[in-house]
Each structure stands twice: as structure tokens, then as C-alpha cells.
Image 1 (tube, rainbow, N blue to C red):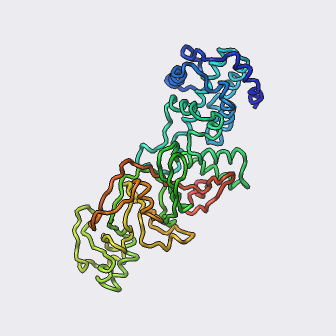
Image 2: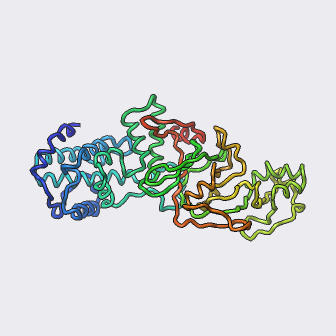
Image 3: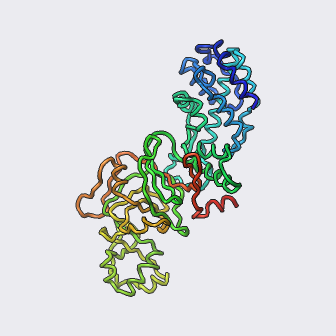
Length: 429
């Protein structure tokens, strides 16, 4: 870019325009402003800081240069660089480098407007098939003043822009891998590009949140932008894939019941009843329920045509009481959703020791549910007595992101995971 060579002369040129400038009175037409409210929001930001410069300040480092580079390569993000009118933006910055105060004001405004537009374009749902259980967790653009204030408060504006600090760090690292061609072949390039779009939906900032990546078969706990703990998980088998979704974890249930899905009842449980009789149900703690409602009645197992259940002609509800054999273990963590997915303990630890752990019916089994509960609640969580379905609300909701990342940054390289659910193949096709 021609403009990059001109940044060397900024320090001397900006000395001419030291101090605050009259942004309150200046609202030049920017290159990418879609409406007057966006321009007004940028002007409000500069008024709130007494006209102090952001991009062209003596301590701004390479912030403006990195922004121009991002805009110039916006096709990597799946965006159109033409939307940001780089020709006009480059001309404005070049003119500002000659020290004209009005040119500096105009370039400042245009850079901020371009930054707000670009950041807003990135902060939109990329349409990769995520179920947003709680709409508040769907990506949405931040207000212009918030975006600019966050950039201004970064320890290094240049690093913040280069790393795309307003998005999850995974996004910035995958993007750099694409731009710097850290891939071995076209297939890897396309994989990184696919995963880049998925990374747009991950959270940013310093709040607590949970990420589950089924293909990595792990759960990660985040605080202050860092992984503070992680554990193995068992996730859905390919024919019962754990879906990508975002939701708030709202409460835990101690001593939970387990309601067997009808297909598992027909294929795995009912045949055992035919072989062993009602003693099988008693030994495993199963009850036949009248229906799927909350006030369902317990029925006599003798009233069921078990052969019809095995054959698929009759569907019944089998509920397993709390106890050592319960498939939910001692607790489950709820983010109520239509898919019937949750995180839970398990009495069967053997699958967690295997390298391939995609064997569940869709829910996510945890390596150490009590440890996860201690992190969620800030203290150990124990049931009060032996009663079933003890609900324990979280003091504050914790966002959960179940994603599908088959290309994950690892230091300066990328780790690739097998496309176990075939999502990459379908997207590429």
C-alpha cells in the first residue's frame, strides 16, 4: 500500500497539530457512513474526550496503519473492501500527514467511521447454523462510542487493531493465519476460512463463559479472556450430533431423573426387559410413566406390551430414579432448549478415557461435574437430602457456547481436528 510508506513522516507532521482539535464543530463526510446517526456517534465520542485524537495521536503507534491493512484485506473476513472506500481514506490520511489541522480532523473522523463500520460488519451473525437459545447471545454490533472507547483504552492501539481485539482471540489468530498463509494446501486454507466464520460467534471481553468443542471433545472455562480450566467431555455420536448452540446456563439439578429417549428405550432397554422381566427395571431404577408431562403417573410395567416397544409400534416413557446407576450421575446443568441438550455428570467414566469420545445421544457428559459446579457456583454444590430433582439456580447466568472448530490456533500454528459431523464437507460442497 502506498500509504504505508507515508506513516514514517507522521510524528513530525503531527507535532504541528499538537493538542486537542475542534472535533465538536467538525463533521466531515466520511467514506463509509451509512446514516447521520453513525457520524453523530463518532462526533460524540470525540466531544467526550475534548477532541483528543485517537488514530493520529503521537502515541497511537501503528493503529491507523493496521486498520488500513485490515480494511484492504476485508475479503478474508467475507466482506467487500469496496464498502470502506479505501481510496478516499488513503487520500485523507496522506493529506493529514502533511500537518494541516483540518485534514487531520477529517482523517480522524473517516478512520473512526471506517473502524466502526468494519467492526459492525464483523459483529453480525455469519449464518453458520448456530441455534441461539437466548437471543441476547446472538452477535450484534456494539454502539460506535463503545467500540471507539474500548479501542482508546487499549494498552496499545496498534496491537488491539492488529489482533482484532473487539472479537474473540480465536478470530484474530485464524485471520492472521489466512493473511500470512500459514497453511499447507488449499484444503487447509478453506478449513481456516470456514472456522473463521464460526469464530465470529464466540464471545469476547472479560466475562466468565464456557466453550464446548465436540470435535476436540473438551470443555473450556474462561475468565478474563483466558482459559482457567478445561476437561474432557463425551459428546454426540455422528448420527446424534451435539448441535452448535449458544445459551445461558441457568441452574443445576441435583439427584436428577433421567428420561430415556424413545429410541434408546426401544433399542437398548426394552430388549433387557423381555429377557430379564420387571426385575431389570427394579435393579436399574426405571419407572414406566404415563406420559411426558411434569405430572405424569407411574404405571405398572406389566401393562406395557414390551414386544411392541422393541418393534417400534409402541412408544413409552421410561424414567430412571436418582442413584448410582442413573445415567445423569449426580447432577446436570441446564440451559433449557428445544433440542433437549444439557451438560451432565455420568456414572460411566470409561468412555472419558478413550481417545474417541463421540458416543452420546447428543448431550455432553463431563469428566468432573463436581469440579465444574465449583467453578460455576464459586463453591461446592451438594444436595439437601435424597429427594429427586433439586434445582439450584445460578447466582448469575453463565453463557455457554457449543461450537464446531476443526481448525484451532495453537501458538503460531493451527491444529486441525477431524470433521466428525461432516459440517465442513457440507459447507465446502
